Amino acid sequence: MEKNFKCWPEGVFKNLTYPEVPIQQILRSAALQWPWRNAIIFGGMEITFQELDTLSDRFATALASMGVKKGDRVGIHLPNCPQFAIAYYGLLKAGAVFVPMSPLLAEREIDFELNDADVETFIGLDMLFAVPQQVIPNSPVKRTIIVSLADCYPPLSAPVKMLQKQPVPEGTIDFVSMVTDYPAEPPQVEFNVKEDLAHIAYTGGTTGTPKGVMVTHYNGVANCCQFAYWFGGGDIVFEDGMFKVKRMEGDRDEDHAVGQGKEISLIVVPWFHAMGAIGYLSMQLLGGNTLVVFPRFDPTEYLQAIPKYRATVFGGAPQLFIPLVENPLFQDTDLSGIRMVASGAAPIPHHLLETLTDKIPGVICEAYGLSECTMGCCANPPSREGFRLGSVGLPIQDTEIRIMEAEEGKEEVPVGEIGEICIKGPQVMQGYWNKPEETAQVLRGGWLYTGDIGRFDEDGYLYIVDRKKDMLIYKGYNVYPRDLEDVINEHPMVAQSAVVGKYDESKGDIPIAFVELVPGGSISEEELLEYANGRLAAYKKIRVVKIVEALPASGAGKILRRELRDQAQDFEL
Image (tube, rainbow, N blue to C red; front, side, top):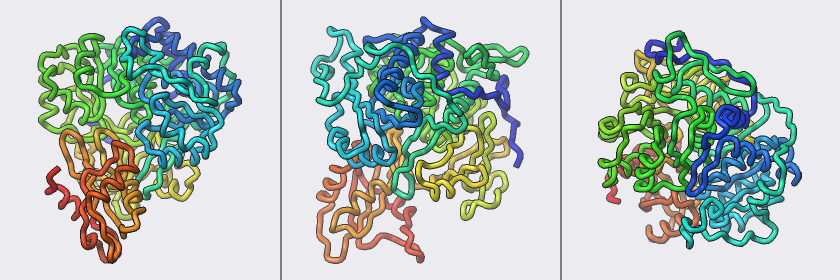
C-alpha cells in the first residue's frame, strides 16, 4: 500500500538527507552554533553547549587512557543529571557503546545486563551503588566510575542529608577526576555509522528474557533528525560540522511548533529509556534547546519550574500529565509560554487532553515508537488541527508502516482492518544482541514486525488497538509480564502464573498476578506477594496476587490472558 500523504503537515519535507556522522556530532553542532547558550540546567549547575562538549571530550580522553576502545560496552546506571550527558557523549566519542541501565533495576536484572552485554566499564551513583556493588565482582566490569549529585549543587543550596557526597568506594574512580585530570583531547576514532553500534538498550517481551536492541549511530542520528524536523519543519543541511535547516519557499521558523536555538525544555523522561536518550537528550540538543533537567518527578517542583525558567516545551507519558493537572498549583501556573507538549507510551485520556488544551496555547502531539525503532516512527502533525484523539498520527519522514494479518504476517490488510504493525525506515534497529533467532523473528525482509496491533484510517492516521506482546506500561515504564512471572514461578509452591494489567488512569497498567499452585501446594496470597516483590524493581511490583485452581487455557495449552484481564478489571485496589 502506498504511503498516504493526504494530511501531511505543511513545511515538513517528505524525505530527509541524513548526514553520515556519529551521534556525538549533534552535540558538537550545537556547541558550534550556540556555544554560550545553556545546554543543561540542573539544581545549582548550568552548563553551556561549549562546556558540555569540552567536558565530554575530557571524559572520552580519560576512558581511552584507561583502555576503553572502539566497540567496548559502557553501562550508565544513573538518573538524569549533567554527569549522565557528559558520560554519554564522552563514551560515544571514545568509540564505546552505550548500555543504559535503569537505577530501578533489581540485582538479578543488573547482573544479567552486565554479563550479557559484556560491560567492562560501569558508571553509577554513590547513593544507589549498594545494589550493583553486589553483582559487579561476578561480572566482566573492569572499572567503576562513581557519580555524586552533590557535585551539582552549591553547598548552601543542597539538601544536605540527601546529597552529602559519599566516600568513593575502594577500587572505584571519582567521576570528577575524569573531567578535571585529563585534557580535552579525545581519541580520533573512525566510524562506519551504518554498522558501528551506539546503543545496546535492553527490552523484554513475551520471551521473558531481556534482549539488547542494537542501535547504530546512523539509526540514532536519523531518528533525531526525523522528529526534530517533524516538529520544526524543513530539511537537513549539514555543513561545516553543523546541522542547519533548509526551508520551503514561504515557510518560516515561527510557522512550526518549535524553533532553533530558543526553546527551553523541561526534562523528566529518563535518559536510560529509549525515548529519553534520543527524544529528550540528543534530539533536544540538535535544535539548540536548553534542558532543565530533573532526576525525579515532583509535580509541584515541575510546575514551579515552568514560569521560573520560562519553559516552552515539555513531554512524557500521560501518567506524567495526570498528577500535574491534579496538582493545586496547576490552575494558577502561567502556561502561556508552552509551545509544545509531546506525549507517548500510552493513549491520552480525553478529559486530560481537554484540560491541557484549555490551559496550554501550544500544540499537543501524541507519538508512537518502540526500542526496536530507536525511539519513534509515528507522530501526529504538530498542529491543533492535525491532532486526532486516539491516534498516534502519521508515519514520519522516510518511514513506511504496513498493517499485516496478525497470524503469519504475510498479507497486508485493507485500510480500516486490524493487523500487526510493521515498520521500515532508517531508524529500525540492526537486531538483538547475540540473539540471531529472535532477530530473524522480528526483522523480515527489511521490515520490523512490532508485535503491536493497529489499523489505519482513510487519512493515513495510525491507531494502536492492542499490544500483542502483552506488555504493561506503568507510570511510563515498560513492564513485561514474563519478567514478573519468572520470579513468581521460582517459588516451589507455584506451578505456573500469568500477570495481566488492570488499567488505572493515573498510573497506567497495574500488575495483577494469577497463580496456580503445584498439587498439594500451600501458601497465602500475601506471602507470595511479599516473596515476588522482594525480588522485583520498585516500578515492577505486583499489586495483587490471586491464587486460582487452574489458569484458563486454550486447547493448545496457551493461557487465555484476555479472560484474566477481564477478571482483573473487577479487582478493588
